[in-house]
Image (cartoon, rainbow, N blue to C red; front, side, top):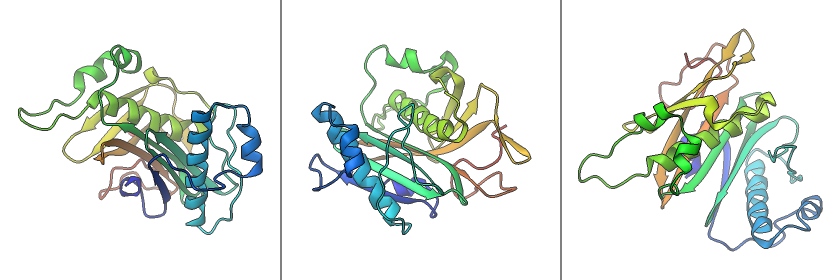
Length: 238
């Protein structure tokens, strides 16, 4: 499912349900979660199993994927990637850094956010611009979609820049007609060659009771838009 939202150069792997394959963790990863609670171990294991399946799609042999200082997955040299997990689902995406500079993905249950959470993660202008469902159309929880998209933006931004990004540091808007979203950064942009990355373009979808969002920054000099898809590119969202 998640691969539908990303360029063909990205390798993706997904895991559905709660059962984990045997030997999902390598010894270094087992040591990392040796004192963690069961649910944390299960989520960590699901993500790492997906990560190795995704890396295998690029011909990369199994290696540990250990968390960095802020929990971001540490990919082998020459790769970028992202992980996500929620109830009954986990996914990993990876790409070669010569082709993709950054990736961010997130999956959430297709349910509204708990009371009070939207106000904590969304700017007033974002809340005002959330799409409204036409009368009689199936309900879509745009509040949680916004949360998910912000998670994808952060996962793409932080490993690339080493800078934190708060919920209030990007302004997101959605196009409900073509499954895309735009994130305009409210903090200084990031140099990409002669250009400056000041925002992201991403894609969203609803599949099997899940909200999925994804962002990719392509390492293609001079490319600013992708007419066929809505992923982010090495060029500013102005």
